[in-house]
Length: 114
Length: 114
Image (tube, rainbow over all chains, first blue to last red):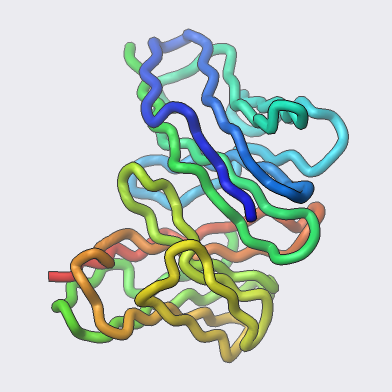
C-alpha cells in the first residue's frame, strides 16, 4: 500500500518570495509521483509528474520538484511566487506496476500575501 | 480540457435516502476513480475501476458502492446517505501507465446530507 504525507497544512509567504511545499511518501514498490493544484472552487489540474530519469522535474507556472528516493520525498519549489499561486496543492503517488490506485496527501494551502 | 463530466454538480438530500452520482468520460480511458474531499483530509479514494465491471475499494469505501457497465460511465451510489457523507466528490480518469498516467479531474459534486 502507498501513503502520502504533506508536512504542512498551510504555508503563508510574501509575494516574490521563494516557497517549498514538502511531500513524503511510503511505498513498498516503485511509484510515479505527482503534484496537483486546486484553485478555489475548481477541480484539480496537474502541475508536474515524475515518471523516471532526471530527479528534477519542471512543471507549469514556474514550479519544479525534486525526487529523492533515499528520503522518499518529492518536494515542490518555486523561486518567486505570485498572488495567482494562491491555491491548494496536493502530492500524489501511484504504483508503476499492479493496481493503479492514485493516492493523495492531505493538501497544503498556499497563501500569498502582498 | 479532458472530456469528463460529473452530474449533478450540487445535491441536497435527506438522511437515509439513496443517492447516485454519475461520472461520464469521452476519452475512452481505462481507469476511473471516485474521491471525496474534506477539509484536513485532502482527497481520499472511495473506489476505482480498471475496466468495465472491474472495480476495487479505496481507503474510505464503507457506505459506498460503484458500478461501471460501460467504459464511459462510472456511478457512485450512497445506499443510505448519512450526514458524514456530506462532502465534495470528485471523479478522475486516467489512461494508464507511463506517459498516459496523468489523471484528469471533473469539476466536483457538492453533496449535502441533511
